[in-house]
Image (cartoon, rainbow, N blue to C red):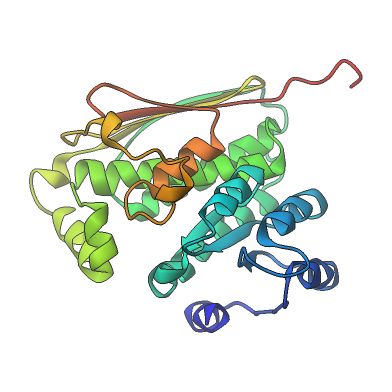
Length: 285
């Protein structure tokens, strides 16, 4: 079913493997752009596949299909290197969109290697409207800066890009446009239609997203602030608890907190600061 959705939803060639071990053999033969995997598999499960794929194919992102009963292993797989996940009950609504976003990030990273190799630090600020295409363009631009500065390993660059995009989309949809993630769970089309309509209505259309970015040899820091009413950060379910993996709320926060070293909200809840530290070289290196 997943392969059929992808074949219909994008210009992608689909290859299949019957389990994790077969997947690694197939990856050696065809070198895919992305892998979508189940978690519960014989011979080599999803977590083991993520670990070995990260080691052998660091530029190939792995996206998980999660279901009830696999929450613990899914959180472990995200921590070990998976790029994103889609709950099985949301495959029809979310799979093609998620794969497209991850592939777009991965492609930008692969195609823009070392454009500005002599840069030693980067700092910039943006004031953005609630335009998903523009937000995505910012993520791609920041990804190219990470490549230029060679600050993080390739897999961490992709994962911090996913975290940044989730934070920007949260600021737009949930912050400025005040569209609840619960609506997305109950009515996918109505969720995006409400966001589209509010993007052209007051007071929502007058709200902006403020982004401050700092990148240097020590790592990176992203600060994202919206002009919405905010929320109580303490009200969020614990995104690292496997029991919350399938909940409609908190998916973006789970990815942000899993992929970044620090995620801090202000008291009002309309600003988040995310930090990822570069690993210091060992004495031997």
